Amino acid sequence: MAQLLRFLKKHRLIISFGFLVVVLLFFIVQPFLAVRLVERLFPRIVWRIETQEPLIAITFDDGPDPIYTPQVLNMLARHKAHATFFLIGERARRYPEIVSAIRAAGHEIGNHTDSHGGTLFSSQSHFEESLLRAEVTLGLRKAKFLRPGGGWIRPAQLDFAAQRGYTIVLGSAYAYDPYRPPSRYIAWVISKNLRAGVIVILHDSGGDRSATVAALESILTAAESKRLRCVTLSNLISEGRKQPTGSLPTRP
Image 1 (cartoon, rainbow, N blue to C red):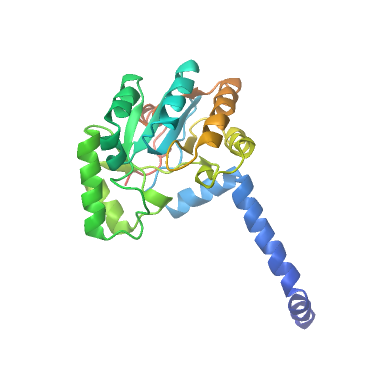
Image 2: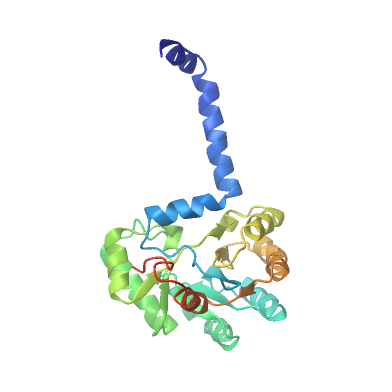
C-alpha cells in the first residue's frame, strides 16, 4: 500500500492529466453508456425512448431564425422528415410567419421559455412567468414539451412545469453545435449515435448555425441509411408507450 501511495504521489500530474483526457474524450465521443447513466441519475427527464420501431426524433432549439430555420425546413421537406422545434417565445413573436411555416409543414413546437438564457439560475417567479408567456405565444395546448435553457432545471422548476402538463425533454445525441464545432464533427457524433428511440439535439438559431445546417444533410442521410424515420416527439413517445410496461422513461 505504501509503495502504491508513493507511486501515485510521484506521478500525480501524469495521472491527473490522463484522467482529464479520458473525461474529455468521454464527452467528445459520447458513448451510449453515458445516456444510460444520466437516465438513472435524472429519471424525471426524457432522454430517449425505448422502442423497437425504427423511429428517432430530431429537435431544434433557440428558434425561430429568419436565416437558418427556413433552410432547415427545406431540408427536412426534401427528406420527408419531421422534427420538433423548441422555440423561444420572444423570437416567436418576432417571426410569427416562421412559426406558422413550422406548423404548416407538420412539425411540432415545444417550449424553450420566453427568452434566451439558462433556466437553472432563473428565480422561480421569473421561470414561471417565462414558461407561461411562451406557452401563450406558442399556442401550446395538448402535448406540451419543455426543454430548459442550458439543459439544467431545478426540482422546484421541474415540479411547476409538470403541474402545467409539461414533459421535460433533453436528448441522447448532442454535438455541442452552439459552440460552432466543424460540421464534420456535428455530423459524425450525431450519425454514430443514431438508433431507434434516440432524441437528437440541434440548434437553428442563437448565432451562426451554418455548420449545423451543413451537417443536417449528412445526419438525415445517415438516418435513411439505417432505415430510421424522423418523427415528432409526440409520435416517438406514443410509440414508446406501446412497448412493455416500464420501458418508457418516467414522466415528470
